[in-house]
Image (cartoon, rainbow, N blue to C red):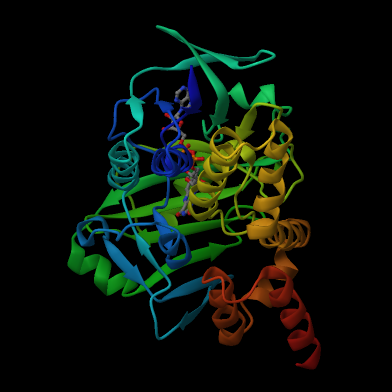
Length: 374
Ligand SMILES: Cc1cc2nc3c(=O)[nH]c(=O)nc-3n(C[C@H](O)[C@H](O)[C@H](O)COP(=O)(O)OP(=O)(O)OC[C@H]3O[C@@H](n4cnc5c(N)ncnc54)[C@H](O)[C@@H]3O)c2cc1C
């Protein structure tokens, strides 16, 4: 009987695993893939996300450093920068493998290439069934990401209105060419994917190019993606990857009596920017801390409810207002894109939201006031 079984070894599962191991929980982590594995992602890791790690991010994992953004809409571009670093770019195969190794280092049992096919809550434990074995644990953390349906033992699956769709590819390029095109900036393109956006992010040997938006706005994501690639001068043949992304900020149930959801499985993503790594890391850590309180410090099972309130206190308001911002963008894309890209100040201030120095609530208030005054 384990104290906790973690399903999924992505950023949320690995962060939960590392914290659980360090706190002394007898932990098993089950991951269906062989690591390192590819994960469709832009690879933007904010400095806020880095600050949540309890170890130094190795230099070799950092492929690019970012201080600002070039924002495009209707044929014009606005560029804004901070005089400090806002985020770095990582390749997810490398970054996720690093997090999983850090989890392993904490002494937990990690089993890769073992897919979980069912979780059943029993009166005193949870039964976790894989393709090979059946395990028992006092508690389970489901960190299976946006895809997969194990999360439905806690909450209903997301409807089409509750998640977005992304297409992404990696376009090989020379470092010098990437430097010339982007410098220390990422590119964000509005008006190319309904109420969502297209991105071009710099990496050491490639550009991450992608589009993302709500399902109803992207009825033909592949065609939209091909148009976006062509419009930006990427004319080769590229392997395209599609992936779901939850709309964060929607009130979802994230705990049952013995099961907690974290990361994308819980729906913890910034609805406007699509940033999910910071929330995956933080929710994984919080899940492990709550379970340690119950297993090791004489807490009660009902204390699992604390997990929801801890997540809410940590990043709930940020996600709630990102959803509000994103909904306005999707409802009135032309008008809001125009306002958002109307001045360098607008983008400059938004960079503070990216850096967690300002939350969406204050940004919206500031933007409304500022726009009225102009
Ligand atoms: C195209 C795209 C671009 C993105 N770009 C960014 C970005 O630039 N910056 C950012 O911060 N966020 C970005 N995100 C969001 C980010 O990728 C997610 O928020 C993050 O990966 C969530 O981590 P996670 O651990 O919850 O889930 P995942 O990273 O999805 O990890 C889940 C893990 O669980 C495993 N698993 C699934 N089912 C099972 C099972 N049944 N048994 C065992 N293992 C299982 C999977 O193999 C996987 O390794 C992007 C998302 C998409 C789709």
